[in-house]
Image (cartoon, rainbow over all chains, first blue to last red):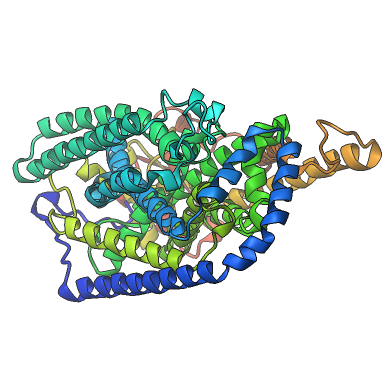
Length: 453
Length: 172
């Protein structure tokens, strides 16, 4: 009503131009990331080499401490930390960072597909104006999934306790009864089958959806929409299973002894809200370029509501997982939080607190009012907070189990995330140029253009 | 709505007409008190120029009050008045209290908000507010203009309402 221009969507086609200047800027960021990474790796190698004697001197004390801890926490639960000590090599932190970023950005890529599928499944109208943005995200799966597969294949024993040598071999010094009991599920072949199989399904369904969506632009007609609904529904079913399975595989199995029945939800919630933040930033970036003028504050309001709601959803899931473990107080469960709260010389405690502030408290307060959700600067602030917070969330999930007390926020971490983020932006920008920014023959486009809340 | 106020009512029988009429009447510098309709009309509140409700601010305040009350009650009973060890936790076991605090926050917000809404809309029990025109509960749309709050003369208001498509113009 209030001053909407009536323009016919049929003659609107808008293309994002990924200029050479823009490309250059992202490549510079990439190079800066690589430089930081190389310097970080160099410092890491020096630091560890220089620290050896100190480590040896402190070994006795550490050993005594471990025994005390083992007694206190009744057995098996601690042996992971001890195991990580034995296997630790300074390069482990690099592989942990590769794994962390690959998991994080795979999530953003695949939830882009999930978002579009969800819009089709629920036959939502409002999102038709901006669905091309998340639709481009899964392109990054072509990079992140191979990284996951290769890292797992060559360096899996660094990341996963259950891949350590001899843990399932009876009679081996490293034999671990609990892990041996899980080896029917957690073994190299089955893990790879799941990773490759579901990954291939994701990419296949995304290609189908993308193809139909682009054909709809050319030919129009509602039959594409019904086909897209079917593809979206198939993806949701597959993603429902695979997101949980990958949460157990990629992240939860790092702490092999520990398990949580809420973990699939928890990791999905983290991926989900991060992707909304990325969608918001991408849409606002395009709007700042003068594109997507038809995305007005009503659509931004909806995206803001999603960010707000799923920040709270994440907080709920994270807190419920914590509360149940805290309340029940079972040693094999509490070890996970003890490790993050007071384990490893307390290096993870600060980020654990920071994470809850960034992921719950600040988005909750910043995005609470209607006006904030309709104002670009507040959306941007909240989106950056959420992305940073959930990166730390994944850091907290992965790092303590892989590198233990050797972790930290160094140049390796900042370099690696810059490399991955700039690669992600580069790939997504390239994919965005391949289609009109508005799905001009989407049957719900007129409804979306008149969206008014 | 006391009896001393002086209303001119334009009666319309179509929602699109009343929506357009609002714009036309306002363009003539006439201030509209309110528009009464049998069902919500999309965009009417914006067209009339009503201020946005401040209920969300009240909601936040009630929620904060609820949170404070819940935390105070739990900490008084569980920490100060009769300390109890439950599950080997500290007396001040904040995580355990969060679910109840959440419920307290929601409860205060819900009751507080409904009460505020009813008071601000004169909807307390026993209050009888007669509609300006009983047909707004059926199939008519009524635009109410308070003559005392307008600089435009009553005759001009009546004329403007007629011109904007009102099927009747009444004085109340």
